[in-house]
Image 1 (spheres, rainbow, N blue to C red):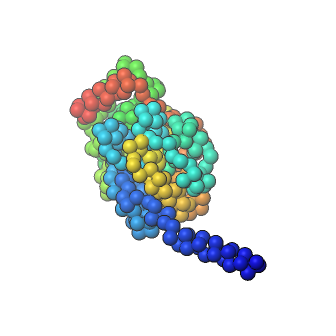
Image 2 (image 1 turned 30 degrees about the vertical axis):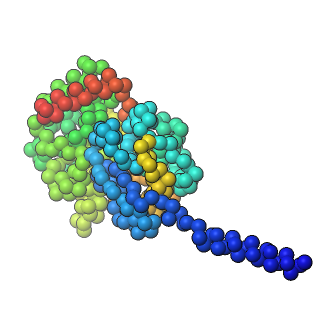
Length: 360
């Protein structure tokens, strides 16, 4: 009887072992392709290759330059799986059922994220996963004897003429950023829905727009700034940091570009990794997001883009130069969030923005 019991136990163990050998691995359960839509220069693209090689999933990777471009693509029916909208756009997309709620059990690396980054006003139910965060202000070349300290550098005609003569100005081709900065300078809310306030911002921009050398929010950090095509630029702090990383030399060990938060304040933002509601590859999308949250991978993303990660596990692996572009506590107090607009207000903003871009 004892022998038969031993044989039975061994047989059960053998069957279990054979079953486990025949069971598909996690990689085998993944889809063969994943469609990812991200901001330009907003990832270490070698990670895409690493993911493909490790898990056998082909990544189709496209870029956008603004939240509005992303939104328009999804509204038109584009079938991406993973997207990286900014905070206010996450809230807007959730309200319009464009984003699927992530199964947090499929993203165990959430444990590495700073709790403050996860508990946000724009995504209280955690549909998405925090990715990178930053602020907007003004980047300037270190050769300037008197660095700017105000949005007046971009909007006051005398100062605009001065910086144009010194080397030129770039402003971001982004309605919420540029109009938001103009509203801040005028003492209004960055989320204003008052036509009179938006028209004042429009008129101010139209007066100086012909002097701007570039309207570029897509790749200025790797094209215009390192080549010194301009002397100052409306900028996200991470892009200013990227320009500093690219211009480090013996003469400039910390790079040639610095960043300020204007005295009137600036905008703050956080991008999130989200799965679209239309995605038929949700589990694979969640697996990819979890891969990005590995501390080593999160650090590689920061070091490649210039932006700091909300990933606590990555902090010791991030280039120390990036910390120079962190806002101080005093600056943080002057930063404001962009909020989603109601449909009528959004149409007003679109109208005002079109007039600026046509006129500029």
